[in-house]
Image 1 (tube, rainbow, N blue to C red):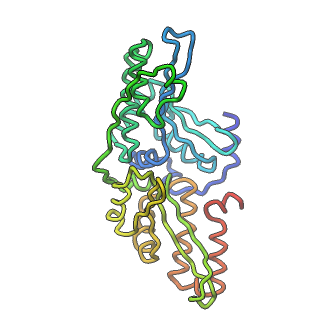
Image 2: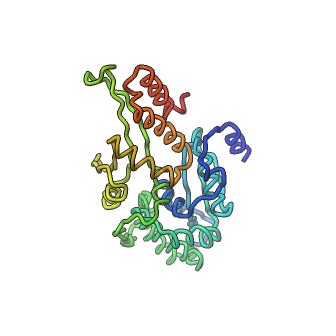
Image 3: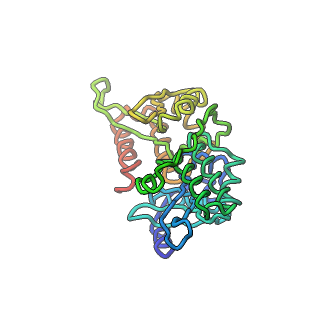
Length: 318
């Protein structure tokens, strides 16, 4: 915790008004979890146990240390349940591993405010394993085999070690999340805080007097399994398109009018949290400069270049 306290001290992050109040909307928490969380079942060798194995359940969110403030907000939302740990040089992780806390805090939240990406299927399997653990079934060989069957369909499936130790396990059928609809705008604010990107690009162009064009982009990426959800964003925000990129789908908005009249006003009401709030604030500055045609002047273009240089990865280097 001393490491974390030092990290807090040295991390300077501009925060939105809701961050200052430390009062996250529950749908924001679910949206952020849809983008960044993991529901994990660990099965490890333990010779002291009768089965020879131990089972651990964990809910976690791992982020770059620059977004430590978001993990603190989420921990606060869950009543200070769990811990925030340093993971390597530049990462931090919020982790809830207590069976009691998973049962009484984490699972009830996602029952009341459901996930809508395919991660919901992981949650359903995870919840069943936690039920088995609460019934002490993980302490018997038969119960352990049930849990391994659930884990086989959870996240990346079984390790080679588990496959070798339990070759006859038949994976439980994993449900397909359908009817993916955004039911609350705060969900999108949370999801964007995790998965969104606001970017400004300066491109050489002979079509402009100064020889440069300013290009703005708002982007959300997700696994191709969530095709229905990603395409629903077009109708929800009234703009943008969805593009395929290998196993990833990207919802992208590039038209200035859509960004200025739809995307920015939406996130002014439903706040983004964490370091992406800073990117959004800079993005808005460029929007306003372009609204007033300053991007067509040398002075205005210079301002935009300076803003762009300090956004996203450039913010870290500065």
